[in-house]
Length: 108
Image (cartoon, rainbow, N blue to C red; front, side, top):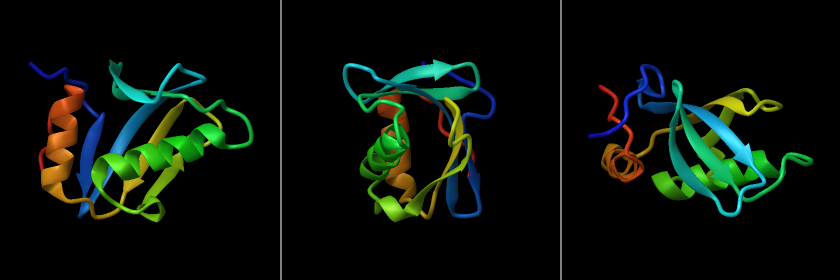
């Protein structure tokens, strides 16, 4: 059964909003489940000069099949806790990624 956190994933119009808890400096970049009300994402990149933020944007763009310019960090650029917007992802790709990550699907 997927883990559930109340505000980890939501839709705002056609955009996907994710609450992310980043862990920079990890062995590899991957989703590590849920941390409170956020999706925990381990990032290989270190938190130096925005490298971890760039890695997060690239990872999410690849996971949701959108260009990196469609992924933006709306809040928390200097924090491990972030709010990320993915502009107009394919709902089928979102559902597939969230199932793989073990995260409950948001209501559209």
